[in-house]
Image (tube, rainbow, N blue to C red; front, side, top):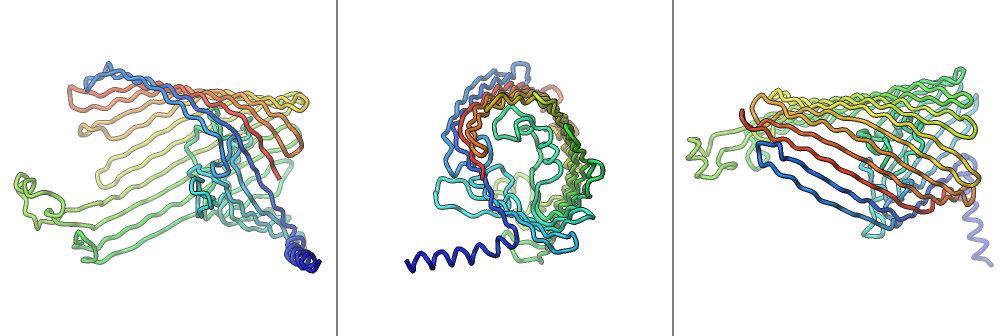
Length: 432
């Protein structure tokens, strides 16, 4: 009896501060079976360099476990809350962990007990203030581009292939952001995000092996800026999100000796001295990515229509040798969602293309890649309760890629790829 009373007193003591701050615990658990089948055709028959035709097939299926991130929805556990500061001002926070989340979007992580499980990740960790003048947040959070994806995604940004969202080349969340969002005016809101990272170091000579005979400077700078404009009123929801990433990575001044890099035979052949100094691992790269997404939905009553459009531009310039790699692409998706009793049926189709340019193997030449892709996704959800849902999903993606790279004046390597991917599965999801 005393043990029960002590346990109740401890639980009440722990719960009291949380209740005073209005803290909510929430999460998603998702378990299911998925299968991915891939057919690839590669045609180099028109290439003047090693012409050939190859074909191969890959089939991969798995039953998701606790440590594999979820099938339809990424698993998570979160804490969010508000505190009334008086005068219409509130303090807000969110701390959210991904359970077995391996989407490449991780911040700090820690291992969980099962050795075969993916690590638990930090999805969101921010704190902020809100009031009549809008809201401000600081920390790791969802960026505005991902919010626009969510507004136009008929499949709720699920993990199955066959949707435009899973073809994107952008991150969903960002570290070190500061965000301001205006209050709503006749359904309109606007916002701005900014974040930066700047790591610079210098190292004096003679501190490394191979020897460094000059001062070495290393810097890694990244800045991110985001904008959003939203409209939500009645059946219409429109969300535009923009993200600009700029980065600079520099490593200048590191040298080593010829003898530390080349063999004696190579030194003799090149006519060098083993004590001669040469530069190593030097780089001076400037990266820039501009990406915007327009997402929208309209509820007609028996059916809700969805639409997405994405535009992406990326460049990476090495200022030491004046070489530049770039790619740009566009993508759109349309879809519809229909509730029928306990069922919700959805269908979507997407189409897009990406053009890439990079330095070719022949001096002053350019290698080009053009990729076109399209796909569709069919979803059936069945609600067992307000929080528990069974699902079945089928997705298909077709990709055609053409690559051309001049090797010499008379020889050009050309590749054509066609990849057909099918992804289907079923499972059960519970939210709390």
